[in-house]
Length: 364
Image (cartoon, rainbow, N blue to C red):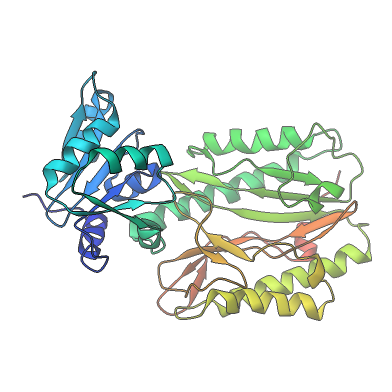
């Protein structure tokens, strides 16, 4: 029997603690994480003895190249994927099978429950996602490169800004530059928000020229070998006004206070709390409308979620964002975001773009 890849072995080893004979993995991102398979429409059946990928003939060659040490079950033209799942489950000898309850549709569950006689399907949540929180060396290296690409794009972009350039043109330029540098593309649709648009945390760029807006919030990230970076800087013109400057200093202090807290064993809600305390000292806490950050990886938003209600504990190998922000409707928004690796001894800030008030000026 071929030795399982380390990630699959970790899942297989956890089945006993979960009181499961097998785990059916249906989420495409989780399938990719565990097996290395980058296609779609495929599941994994994991038992303590072996793992089988269930797919179709389009991917036979791709699976052979990407999924060493994994058995393959390919459906024929007269079968649906769920038919192959049924056959493989019934032949596995498993009695208790975990399913990703928040990924399986009601129709899929009913089919399995009705056709797989003698099997008990057990609802599970975030089993693979918890494994994904701790990054290995390859994942960290890919994220580093995603950060490097995003930073290079930003540095090259800033000198091109002028009053006629629109938010949407800037967003398109960001993606174009990323691809030229070897990224697969953006890790999410860039947020480019001039002036009042910055007060909307998930603003969508418009055909709006920068014109005489005094501030410009850019939230962007690259995807490299599947892994995401996520950065934000808020630029301003020299005459932006005292209210903006005071708020900016408060947000920066909040971010630095939170980053200083990051080390293994610290509850993420305490990190979030450090940022909120700094914002409160500056009298701007009421303008902070979201959690402090999130994990990144194969998805832009992963666990742990950095918020006051999170119960996660930081551990070495996690990569998280720290992104406090304040938002004033009709006026401006400020967000400062960096990607942080939790290390054995503390943390490493993966992104190194300057972020002081005087560092983030732009001239139209």
